[in-house]
Length: 347
Image (tube, rainbow, N blue to C red):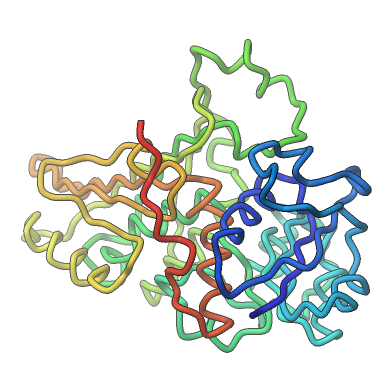
């Protein structure tokens, strides 16, 4: 039995991880930490957990996590806020999976361009990007894993096979993503996320400047073997959860849709959570809601030579807490799919 502590437990990401772990036979939650919620029962904050867990939220600090005998810390604290805590946890002998952006980017200049000054740039080289479909063998022995952003998860999974196989050019790649409002977190009080403002409306935001862009560039560049930059445009849509990504890349001449499909099916043949849909089928966010799955649709536009790839993920599961659990399973030598095999909710 592996004991873990969760800091930032009262956010959507932390609460979803708790919900998933309650169905895990080989993991025990021994500590929950928070900030504004210290002293409150987690099941009172999240009534869906009533009768399933009886635990009061403590301070977001390393000593009580160590005192409870934890071996792994899952830090769901915001970027920068948790960086010192992650460093302290590693020094205390804990393994760490970090939800924030603090350790995703290898280039500190890119981090500081999109976020702010990095308090621990010396740790970036050690951190492993926590997308098992690309970094499984690195995650297994890792001390520090950085969970991917929700948008990059959908975008990278959509494009990885085409980029690695050199099916598309490295210039002019476009990623268009549409997300539910839960991605903004539970305490975001920005007017844009209020029901009357978002209901029956769509909105593009942070066009070509969203802070998840360098993650997509970084991982696709590694696959390509050369620098690659995408144009990324996110949109906010009036649903609670889910991300639909449509990615566009120009195919090299002479490549057919059947060849593209062969590449994708081979790339994901042994991946338990990625499904390449049949010809003519397109994924919907409802197909993956509440699950750790990613569904991918493929189309080649013959007139324009464009490869059009659609992907769907649940932004709070495969886009965050499910990915964290997938990494945790690998790190503790547990079956990767443990507590993650439930199908999506329907309807």
